[in-house]
Length: 170
Image (cartoon, rainbow, N blue to C red; front, side, top):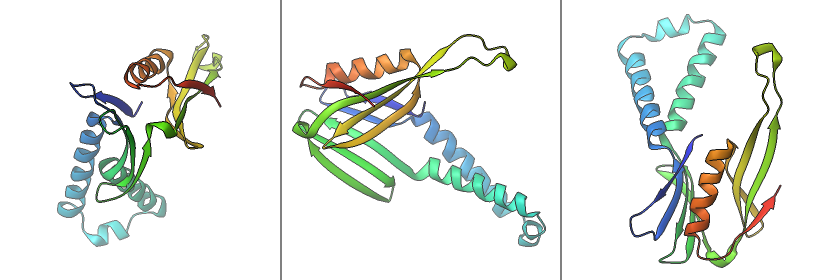
């Protein structure tokens, strides 16, 4: 849903990152919210809001800020035989480095979403969780993939990763 896979032309680098379109739309929304607050509102007008309106405005600004500035990226580099995980804000992130030897398994879980007759949805759907186990640490990439997207993520990863990787259900 939120992640995309990027493979460079030489097929030396595989990156799981937030979709560019999601980041761009979030940035546009954040900038427009800030412009609205700066140019259209006065402080006294915001103070006259009801409590739940203030909370709702704060939540929207906070979520658009996170969508714009939060970095969650996993890079697999064949050139260096390294896995680099970056988590945090664009200007303040934590970097974790692992070797390919530390990689243990591809983690998945298949979950049945029950049909809902109230909204005339009678078919059963499965959702997949996709992630990695690196040094006894489980890193979840996506948790609500459809079967097609799950197979796409899995096939791209298996064709890229130089070693045999096991599948582990959680």
